[in-house]
Image (cartoon, rainbow, N blue to C red; front, side, top):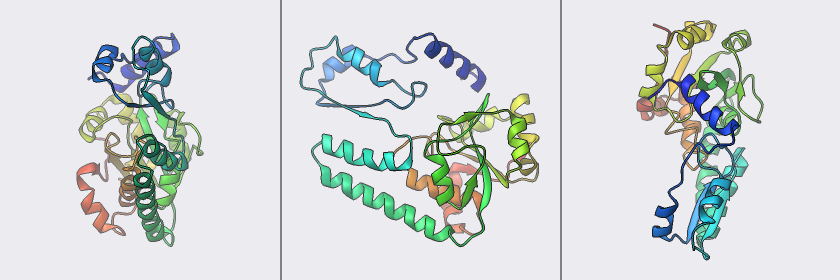
Length: 258
């Protein structure tokens, strides 16, 4: 797989040039003849967009297909999408039950962390260029006992490593979008990324955790409740020993530049 800098340049070049970053198998859709298609209209870099799906459907004879488009930006949007998908599928009660289980799990984490001192953190969502995670992630970080820096609840931001170092967070969490833990670790040996992270005092002190962004955090679905637990374990493994043990396969704690 190409390095993250090449991936970023290629995808941005396609999107900025009004080209599609993804190809939809319209013929395959026609053969499947689905009743419902769930798509997204939040990030044209991460998945096929709503307009691409509509374009693919325009040449197919599927008059009865229902298109369910999701555009979650914040945690309340994710919760509402549970209900939206369930309503389209004709099982609204299952959407409500899922939302209630999701809320209860987040409440348990919030209750566990509310009396602990807050820890400032920077969540790195992409490595080249470095990007700080926005959207639903700052709220998850607060639920997990953290105070996110360099970003509000809006869009993710591209920043230089010097800005992250200047913010001087208590902790750094690295969770690149779409990258497995192994994929991320392989990228951290790249000189520019290694040196950039190494310029941050928290990283040099061993207060840096690498997380499986592909399985957690990046995707706006029910697993975000587990993602809050994972973040809590990353920030305070001694206070959440049970969570640190449960999520050990999804994180590498105490990472330092080699």
